Image (cartoon, rainbow, N blue to C red; front, side, top):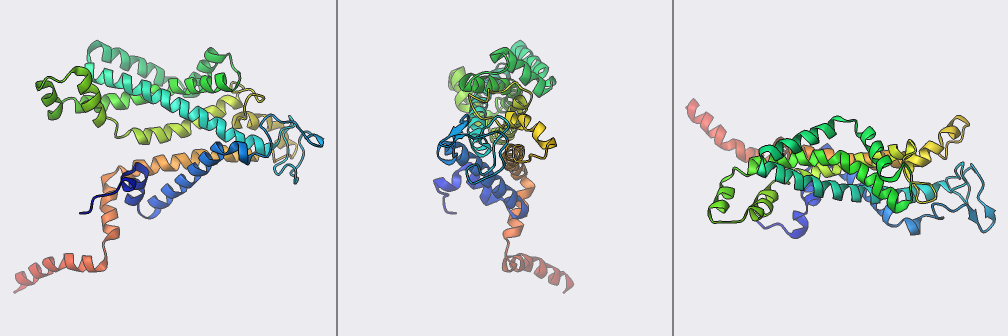
Length: 330
């Protein structure tokens, strides 16, 4: 069997090659939506026609609630901002918050889960009780409390991104702690861990080199699902007025809140773009996460092998059975 190249060993590429039928379609659709979101966020300074807080052009003020026009393809908001520019810049804000929140929660959650599962004893019980207590609170309520405690409700771009990310991190840490802890408890009783102890390896070397490397296989799935939840939580914080100030950064949840009064007045162009951006981004990341979850099912690998089997292979596989039946008849 030929050895797979580096490109084929990449997680997403490997899972894409494993998928078949509808499963592959879901994964491809999720990857396309997530890639569009990533490109829009990274290229926002070049894609957006105006800045996120720009109110004036060469001909003067933009005007409030202006309908779509060649100058403003998606119109303007009640505050006089360009809707298209705010929507594009909002992708960059969402990406910042998701990256910071995931990095913080993964680092802290994995470290605590590793220590809790490997050390055990009273420390394990205390960490599990604290994690369960945090996890029992409604995630949005906990995020609101954390946002108020960190920044007092609203703030600029960097403090706002950090406060939103920390608020989301508090919600995510118990998930990573429980998942990693369960894997560590299973792995630390394996024979290779006992062998490392026998040859005199240090505790930290065993924890990080042997146990941790074999306890993080399910993390990519959790990361994708948490990324979509982070975007939803950020939008909810902005919608409720606990997000980032509009003059500091564009945020989809805040823009959606400001467009509530416009909808009743028949002004549709201020609500649809940010709402659509939230839905499509969450949908794309969720499709990736659900596809990875299904691909982890060993039954799918059997279906994939059956789908790739040619008619000639099926006939060849059935010949020994046919010969055996004919022999019994004779």
